[in-house]
Amino acid sequence: MRTDTRMSSTKEYYFEVQQERFLAWAKDNHGIELDQDEDAETWERLSLEYSSMQDAMEEEAEYRWLRRHPHTEFFNEFARELVTASALLDQPLAIDKAQTLYKLVYAHAVTLLESLVSSVVRSIVAGNPVFVAHMATGYDELSKRKFTLKEIIEQPKGVESIVLKTLSDLSFHNPHTIKAVMDSAFGKHMKGLDLRGISPICAKRHDIIHRNGRTIDDDPIKLDLAEVTQGITVIRAFAADLQSRIYNALEEEESEPF
Image (cartoon, rainbow, N blue to C red):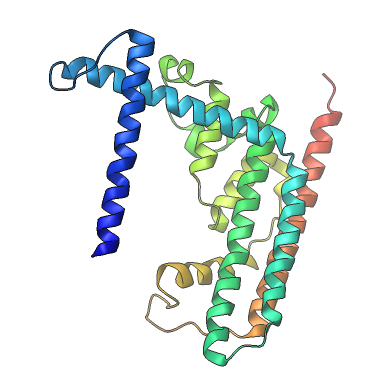
């Protein structure tokens, strides 16, 4: 009960701070002392304007972060983190605790892959009109959507912002999502990309995370050291294959004549 009270108080404080910042912004930028009860229409209009401004600032901060970190850095970081996760398996543990550790490491390895794919693709797309165009025309969720000119103009960087926002909203622990995005961005270089190894690993990760370690038939998942180690090996090999294919695509793009 006390925890719920603290959470409620924290939320209330957060909203109060946000509202104070909004009111200060309205006064500084529009010279208005806002009162929601007296002028609900102006409050709503400026709230939308303030919210859009905040979203644009967050998008710009994310964009600059992506430009600061090249895709090679994400591959190196992934390799280091996967080694760290593997090292956890060397700890001597009781059987009941070992099961918990195995599930945590197994799920974390998939999360590392998800983060890698998301970061690498967005890093390459950011500031590269060629790959922005590949995604915009090749990825169904983007190519089949209809946008008004107003919607495009309102984005800080036009089509590029829309593509990056779409990529940011995707969950890459689904192998089919990985394949669809990779095909769109890198075309022929992803021909033959083999999902058979990681698909069952991703499915088991889903059961561990979303069903507390049970299958859809309520069968408990039991992992052993060999299966977790093999899963990490498969994930490492898949990431290495992706890296090679992406580097080949980038080399070809860079060698294309203007």
